[in-house]
Amino acid sequence: MTTKHSAVPTTYSPSPTSRSKPSVSKDSIVDWVRPDGRGYRQCRPAFFRTGAVNAASGSAYAEFGNTKVIVSVFGPRESKKAMMYSDVGRLNCNVGFTTFATPIRGQGSDHKEFSSLLHKALEGAIILETFPKTTVDVFALVLESGGSDLPVIISCASVALADAGIMMYDLVAAVSMSCLGKNLVIDPITEEESYQDGSLMITCMPSRYEVTQLTVIGEWSTPEINEAMELCLDACSKLAEIMRSSLKEVVSGSQE
Amino acid sequence: MFCGKEDKLETMELPNDSGDLGSEMEVDAFRRLFPLRFYERHLAESIRPDARPLSRARDTTVALGAVASANGSALAKIGSTTMLAAIKMEVMTPSVELPDEGCIAIEFHMPPICSPLVRPGRPAEVAPVVSKQLSDTILSSGMINLKELSLVSGKAAWMAYLDIYCLDADGALFDAALLSAVAAFSHLQIPVVSLNDDGKIVMLSEEQDDGNLDKGAVNKEKRKIALSSIPFSLTCVLHKNYILADPTAEEESIMETVVTVVLDSSNQLVSLYKPGGPVLARTSVLQDCVALTRQRIKELQNILDEAISGMEVD
Image (cartoon, rainbow over all chains, first blue to last red; front, side, top):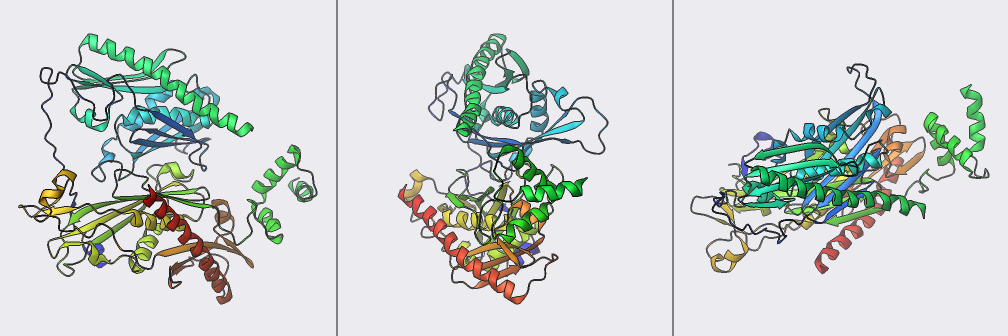
């Protein structure tokens, strides 16, 4: 007790922190071996479950390998007092990390941009006209970060919005890809993301074949981008099937 | 207009009324408009709206090892209230006054996902209160001997960061948080470490284990923390002469007097919180609360033991 209050001692994690990064360049890596033994074009098994949080209007839990996310949706409810009058509804997004989400404690808070990226990915899919003057809050918490966090958050948020009964044009599915040397790997884990030369993420509405967000970071050649986009769009439509079936499960279960 | 309707509604709520959809809708409206009266009508029949007797706690589950990246973790559920606790072990230099003791830092978080009342940037008022109660309870219960967290006297000791996240808030937050914290400690596996040449503590990986054991491994035998006298708690809500064990968020918001009793596994009183509220707690009421807690900790002890033995089978 006394030690705790007098001065918080500086601590460090005993796990080896600075792993020697292999020099990854276009020439040196010919064949990247995925640490979890997947093929380059193989996504991790995806799991969705709605109704994870009873206190929320709608919620979903998503698990892709070690990436575990909960998203709660609140509202439509009264907008903040300071907000101007608006004919259309507002969407408010926030992404948080637990302190134990990352191998080293408290590093998850580095991703401040996730909240606005989540907002932009979802905004186009939601029919904002259906809840004028009010706000829908979408809050995400990353329980464990295992790579491809943002696409998992976005897909999970769209399932949570559907669970809350918010009107959407379509579900939003998101898939990312990493470029490691000459290799393109889909749905990368944290280790692959740390070695990547470039990354690409697509969020789309598969039934309408419309893209709501596309981010390309790092070194890419045009043919690589085209190939990656094809692969991501294909993976998105498969992912949307899984998301849809998780929503159907609940409905058919409750009717029994 | 409301007064007339209210009388009508009260008659509609009687049990002999058939449960067609129309009347159920009215009951729901009555519940929202006159929550206290709604509850009092139930309490008079010694039953709660969720069909529990007054003294019964909700279904409780504990799952150990929910977070792979932590050294110890647990998920505890009491009804809908869900808590995820995880412990990460880091190394610190112990203070000069206490060279043989480690440290435990406990923090309770209420992220915006857990309740409509919490918004980002505006943290819940209760979070720091529960945080303080938890660290007071855990550190003063003597559950953990801080000397066990020592590695090299005066040079290195463990700092156990215990973070508890509320994933779903539906009343009795402290009870669920304490249960998840205790369960996380019982799941804790301390990594094997050694002192390297720079005076830093480093983790021994699996393959190094056999060759380097004599050289390193300052804590070969201390892989688990011995837990003595584990604290368990029960929160009760007081209203008039009624005592409601393990309240939901709705019950806590309607009837504001809360009493939390913490007992350890040998039935010794660890702490008792009664933070204000309109109902004065008489001695007899407090004794009843303690008696209810005594029954409850037997259940909790069994639930925890089952979770631990379930882990050992795997």
